Length: 221
Length: 356
Image 1 (cartoon, rainbow over the protein chains, first blue to last red):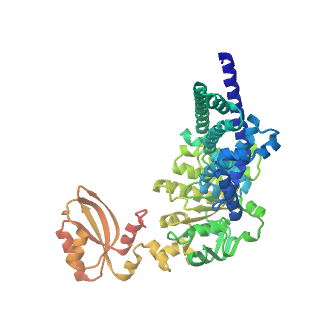
Image 2 (cartoon, helix red, strand yellow):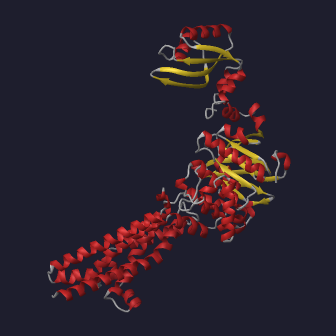
Image 3 (spheres, rainbow over the protein chains, first blue to last red):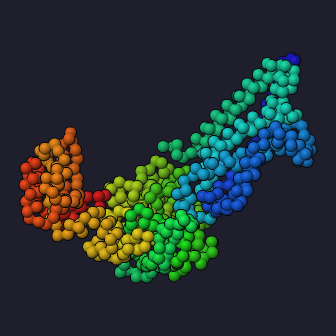
């Protein structure tokens, strides 16, 4: 394979990987963030305890998280087809990624929100803050740095999952690694994709953590 | 809006508690935090609620704004039964009941000014007015130059000042103080108490404070309730201090209360350790040698290289012979001893902050 074509293939793979990862992360957060808030708020120490709902949510989330991603990927193929019209390519990888990542994100968000000092919530309640105001102005606002750290972990995890989707016809660097490296024994291509994945993770991690620190007023001392 | 003597200014009832009871847990693990509390708090006064830890103080103060729902009984605030209110009405009422806490509870991601703005944002006040009001409040608590500082950049005392400004921003009728000075050193405690007192005098805000420290109650409260799950006694601070009627009040005022009773009609000695005393446990040896029970009322001594420096007030039985024996024993050991009156002995107690 000549160099320019090779570059095109790799470049295309990178674009697709980033596309899958970012779009999936956004959608997974659209589901996972409210779920995480709901888990915290309805939890035993939440501002609006609802034991039954909390338990049911917990079981659903744990069950989804227990399913290995590769199996989930195949199991929801019919749903994927209905949602995006195809079961192969990058876009088809997004529904399973979202479904796999949302419960994971819900837990990450929950753990960030649980770190918020209960005293702050009590203070807000004493001032007459409504539950919605407490969620937006206390929980999410106070936990923002920790939420950002969580988002870094979530994004890199989704990136890892997206590479796995290469096995079932998904696109991106994972697909290149599988198609060239695994099926055609082009180990060098495989190593290059792995190297690129490492670089992407590093960049996300570095930028994300820097943002997280900058968001935290406690570090301003 | 100004008067030197809050209780005289306005005898209107601000809070009325009727048979307030709060039970935590169920069945076997049931714990009664407070029981049958009847209490009236007047508008404009500084009311202290004192008790040992576990006496239900925190629960009681949280019942006043329904952060804690009582198991039975009523909380009547300005004639309104708080428990009869809808959720929304209760949130409105809470804006009239400010609260400060032992750990300040400032939002860590907001500056001092933004913290003070917080209750105003909640009540839907416009941006500009809220900022103006918040600035005024920071001025009031003496921290106008710290408006851009984050809580981590402020000392404990400064944080509590911001918390006070925040609690007063929505112009409440009453300020609830939950062990507001317990995390502060004595000097800072004093300055915060002075601030609270001046707020009470200039703004006419009623102050209700719970504490386990007698010195706090003594410093600024007009009236005090001593609680131990139930109310042990209520009265003017001077009255309760001079003539504590309940066992729990005596325990809080005289930490060795029971011994005081047992040794009724006793005498007091002040012992001064000036470093010349022999290297030995003097008080212990004295009790052994004289076969007399003594009670240490207060002590302020430190050990430097094994030699004791400082002084101590002890209580001994009235018996003249016993006293002679003790005096001669102590003198023989090279310490200075003098007999003091009961008043001096008690004063010695009270002058030692934190030991009371």
